[in-house]
Image (cartoon, rainbow, N blue to C red):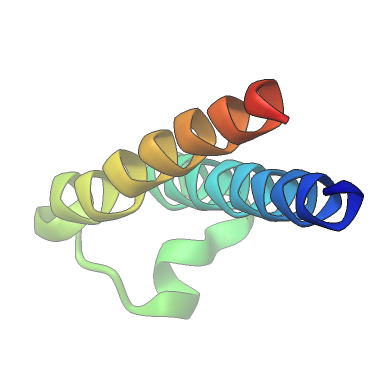
Length: 72
């Protein structure tokens, strides 16, 4: 039972970290910190799409990670 709780906590933490990384990457691309739009080759027309592609799964990953951490 302790191994299951540890596994659930680890998966929840990993999901939360991946979600936060996706949100940070989306904001970095959108606001063009460190000229990352040029490095990744993202055009200005595709910025809302890239924000949507990274933002929505990021929020779901953060939410499910927090729910897993609360459940343990």
